[in-house]
Amino acid sequence: MKRKFSVIIIFILIASLFAAQVQANSKKNFYRELGKKLSKNRQDYIYLTDSEFANFREIHTTGIKRGVLYRSSSPVKTWGNRNFIADNESKRVGIKTFINLADNVKDMKACKGYPGSYYSTQNVICLDLSTKFKSKDFRERLARGIKAMSESQPPFLIHCDLGKDRAGFVCALIECLTGASLNEVVQDYMISFYNYFGIQPGSSDYEFVANNEIRAFLSQAFGVKLGQLSKINLIDGAERYFMSLGLSVKDIEALISKLVN
Image (tube, rainbow, N blue to C red; front, side):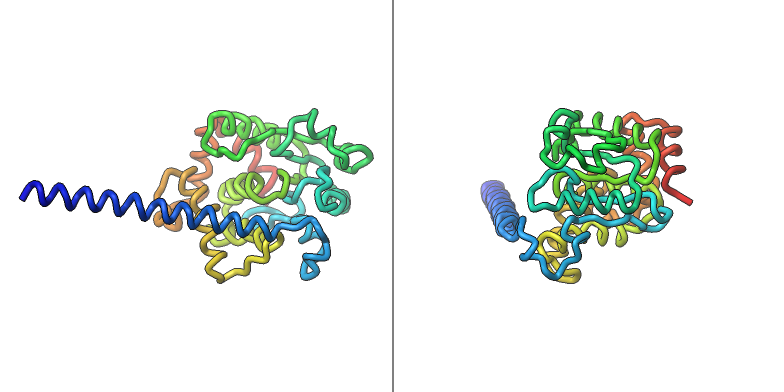
């Protein structure tokens, strides 16, 4: 009997490992195919406005006052000429502080789009973040960036390279902190996947990305299971996350005061 039970347990473990491997391969294949849709050619995105092509938009989720927080692709990296649009839009809305999540100062100034740009005349906070959101280095750099942001002049623009992953995660945390609902946070995050890959709300691809990206990011950051994310207080979750980075209550309140009515 014991031997039979052991065989069953081994079979279940093997089946679980196989299922996990199939799921991992499926996810890898999905993102590989998605990456093929990304183009630098404006003609491939005729259904987008110029701002959408540059993934430039204002964040106005619940709690955030109008005209203080924006996000976009890089205003200085010239891939696809998106930078010219992002830079011009930044000038149009009067961005005073840029939070550059992707570069250090040296690399930023070496970008072909940097000399002569509006961006180069304003305050830029360079964080040079990796995409390893749980790493100590990421957390320390993000803490420095949030503190610097709380001490700087709005309007703010947050960007990385495409303004999709790193910018998406940081913007989501700020949206949670300032009172956005989970639906608002997910919707803002997923706009980038429409702008770059044409993923439509309500599609199976939309739900796949939302679950594997922004919902997964937030559940890890807030220390809850994915299924519990919709049941927690997102403001409290964001506050605890920022404090876990080493930020003080005063730092967090200073940031909120710049963004919230």
